[in-house]
Image 1 (cartoon, rainbow, N blue to C red):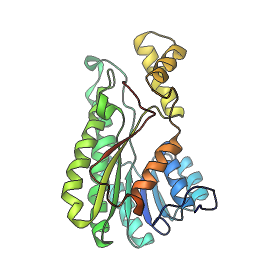
Image 2 (image 1 turned 120 degrees about the vertical axis):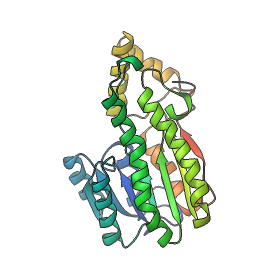
Image 3 (image 1 turned 90 degrees about the vertical axis):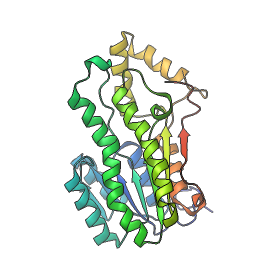
Length: 265
């Protein structure tokens, strides 16, 4: 069985109410597009107003608000509006994160370190704290937390990012135990080298840090993947949709790499 776009129709997604942070670009937008195609009802937030307007129009999102997930007040407003307009919540995708600085640990200033953790880890806490009462009221649901391959390998010269993503794994496993009795499933996705402007910037920064060409650094990154290719954001979206759907109803507390078998970072 397929939907109108030709994708496999996953059970239970039609009508499911899903909140997605950083849902107007990159992986978040890919997730939102797939869920919309499957008939889900969407609430998205982002920090880019132009991208948010464009995505909301494309997706038909019922909620589309500017919100920095590291800021408690906008997060509260986003989930209050989600409750009002969607009538509740069935799933949360904690997708927001930033790359953080590329530098040796002795060169990283405290503000840069803190900002990376605030968005990538504390933001997940703030959004989950707001969403859990809504998920309980719905009789259960799913939370998908975006980690990274850096959350299992570590990442030299990217210590704030790696620390945040390792923290997401601990947060995920702890929540799965805590929320399981409420029939709330919590899993993490660990994307690898995902195609798009963000990885282009990461590769350029890493090349500058280590004194090699951008082309050589790109080849080095791809060479660490067993399948010798980057991962399209749509592949990460497919995993998120599966975990939110009824097909993933017995998956919780797990970390799922989507990376072509990335061997190292």
